[in-house]
Length: 430
Image (tube, one colour):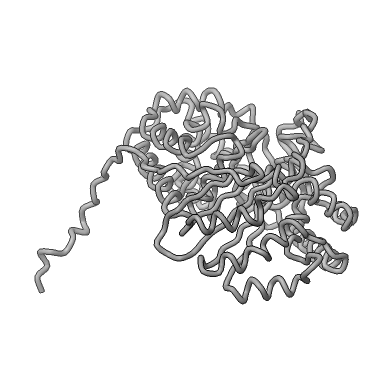
């Protein structure tokens, strides 16, 4: 056997620095009624993804959990079809519908073959425009939701997550809704229909079509969603009153039978519209944003306190926050918290080494390119930034920021944003 042509597996391959992020802008057109429709015509497979993004997330709730329940129940029946009939129609054509609700938006997505798009779109149109929220389906949904909530309330991670958001935003803030069984009891068919009528209309929507997209597919979308009858009026932004943040920095949520403690440490933070956000994303990755991070190396690999620990920068349309989360044994909780703070403080006192920073840059650049590899992935990334009035230029700038940032830049960001006495510390367990 000639081994001369085999790769040398003892030598680490050299890194090749990329010169920029090549990303073609989506085509933007407006339907006859003015709804923006972005087209990403790429890919080799004869498949399509149609996303309709509504300003109908938790921020828009007039009473808790309505946005989530309304979005989840869109497929449970219309004036023409039962939930089973709708499911059978989508299954027959090999199509799939996915619903998702976030803090700010609600998205309804259709995946199907190009050849079946025109046959499937009438049923998709039905669930978007004519959701009925039948009483018997709502009864089943609420029973299941309350049972799921009961199970979730036994988890220390669920308890710490809720208390953390409540602590940084304040009780009653739309970004800090803590789900209660009583909230489900107050949700009625009439409440859901009213929310659907005011928020699931064209004036409140953005459309993204990706995959093998042509004029024919655009014409089908315009035929069903471009009419004036569906456009409606723009839903009013509730402009939630500013709620004072909690002045308690350390909170223990007692759970006597817990074998682990769930830890969340963080603070309110800038969102992606702020010029420092991109740099903070790099700093976050160094600290706890990937498997090779400092928190993983210390808390997991060296100390063995946890299976995993993660930090994240969460951007919301009207705010944002930074959070570190992990679960550890109750006997090492205090030691783990001390090590977390030690790693945070180190970022503001010791410059990051060139080799470590380059490793992070390579990871982030590669992840960004992977997350933009393919039409469906590009649609996901586009829907993430559109609510902020941004487009693909944001990702081009982000790519450049990753590769230009220096250890000096990062230490200055840590000194400004990661001051340990500004953090809220939540522990659920014991």
